[in-house]
Image: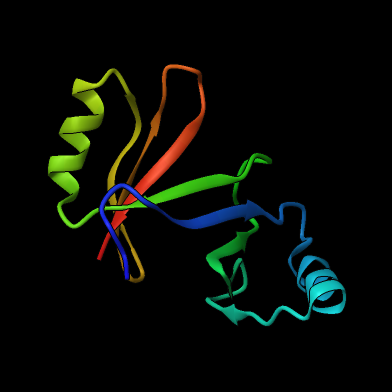
Length: 111
């Protein structure tokens, strides 16, 4: 069950056209299976759900869940987080990205 403020998803890079090779690696090494969402994104469900995308930075992106995205965005700002990507829609929901005081980028999503 999804809960506010809990880690819910992890996005990792498959930049440089590496999506097929990344999928092949994790399938062979760990038995993972994938759901493709177009040519640039493949999702996995392996304890912690996540996905590989060809258009991401090299660092993994931890994603938290929220039942009220605007309330969570306000709380992040009030706590000193810096919004680096305002709320946007994607297939399945909406999300925003922020940087914490240590410089880590995270995202928060809502259905």
